[in-house]
Length: 130
Image (cartoon, rainbow, N blue to C red; front, top):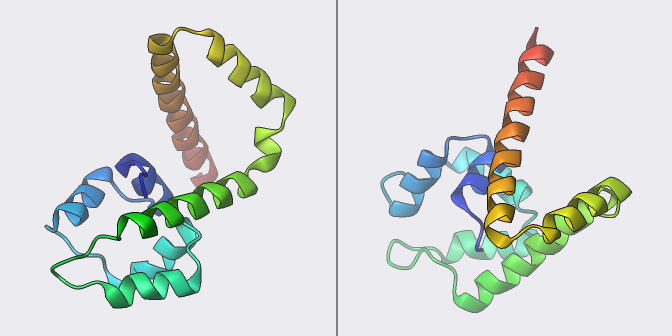
């Protein structure tokens, strides 16, 4: 679906190395996690059932057209779920500012911002646990 391992791990609340091991075939997906995966990627029931029932040990990957269709569905569901944020004035302004940076600085800014967001989330979770 052209989704990075870090994003998959974040959505499923697991370490990225687990995703890597699953993709390489070193680990398998626990059946109990299937509903979580379906929910995390908003995969329609019929498509998810087809993915599971059609998988065998020789060809566990989706066909290109299927992957493209699921990627489009995922992107649309992600957009729909976060439309309010995307259309907010502050996010639009951030996006415009980001586009004025040279490409190498855009990548650096996104990397740094992501680290800061992860630190904020961790701090928030700790505070929430206390």
